[in-house]
Image (cartoon, rainbow, N blue to C red; front, side, top):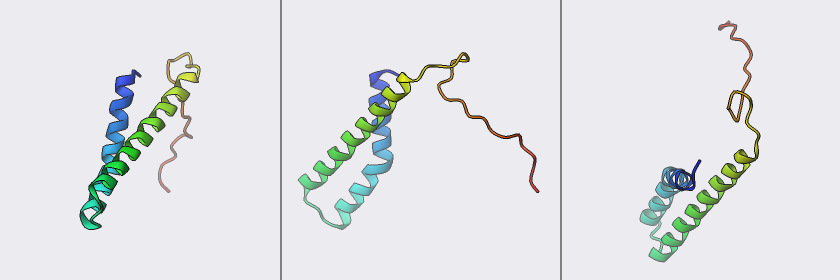
Length: 81
């Protein structure tokens, strides 16, 4: 994953989670403009940092022979009942 894709993913996470909550609180609680901007930047840097840590951690994993980083083994499906 390139750095640009990492930043894009972090901004998408930020836009989906933090942005609506902070804008809603800015409208209904009537926070000062600089407080809202500071909180938005705080959440954005937190999202970028979290995505960067996960990206770094996944790059440290050795890929399996099939090329997948993560493999999930599920028990066989026995149906409902």
